Amino acid sequence: MGNLFEKLSDDGRIGLEALRGEPARAVLAFDFDGTLSPIVADPEQAYAHPGVVPALSRLAPLVGAVVVVTGRPAATAVRLGGFAGVAGLEHLTVLGHYGLERWDAATGELSAPAEHPGVTALRPELPGLLAAAGTPEGAWIEDKGHALAVHTRRTAAPDEALALLDAPLRAAADRHGLAVEPGRMVLELRPPGMDKGVVLTAFLRERAAGSVLFAGDDLGDLTAYDAVDALRASRGLPGLLVCSAPSTGEPPVRALAERADLIVPGPEGVVELLGRLAGELSSVD
Image 1 (spheres, rainbow, N blue to C red):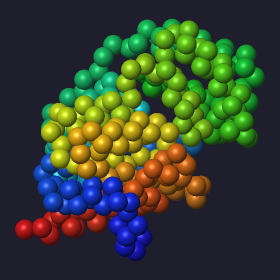
Image 2 (spheres, rainbow, N blue to C red):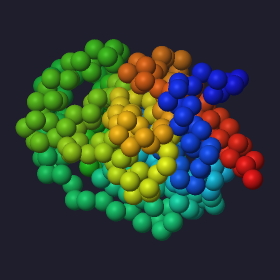
Image 3 (cartoon, rainbow, N blue to C red):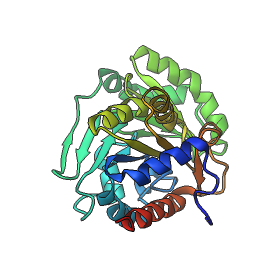
């Protein structure tokens, strides 16, 4: 990627310098799908890029904290990421289901609340709802436990299928007290009140962060972008916002790309970013 930091925004440059200057107070936060792992047709096969664990295990001991903030169940992200039992990742935290679940590498313990009653009620209704809406072949339901996601990536016209399902899924979410989280060829129905911005802000406060890097790729990451921008403004907390562009050659999500301080080419670009940072920080006396 040449000089990776050459085109940083002014805010991003301030965030990078704060991270470099006081890495022990820096928090590095990452989305999982599309950021640490490629987007694939079957989410159960979305393993982390093979360079992620080596890069993170080299970088994590040099900074204050590394956290993965994902809509996935925490245990799924840990499994697909290959994060458990890795030397150097002892202080990694995975916040799953937008912060409803938490896994800490130091103990291997997973904490999770009871399932939201709206998810419990909607689960048996959802197949019939999709059939009644005339959902095209290829759409499918991913049961995440604390949330339900409807994917259209495998349909002949994914965007059209998503538009067809938007209104009935939002109506179902309203009936059951759930929130709808849109993404790239997916609509997720989940408990309200938690998003990546809320959970990232709480984690930064918990760690008394002096700077933050957040990397994401999709609409669900916008609330984390909002949180970093708000902290920049209110507390003067330096931040660096990274957009992971799709590995498939598709354009990045415009809403993220327009606000990012740095755009990298998918998980491969994220791995290169981690390697650059690890190299710089490890050379500091």
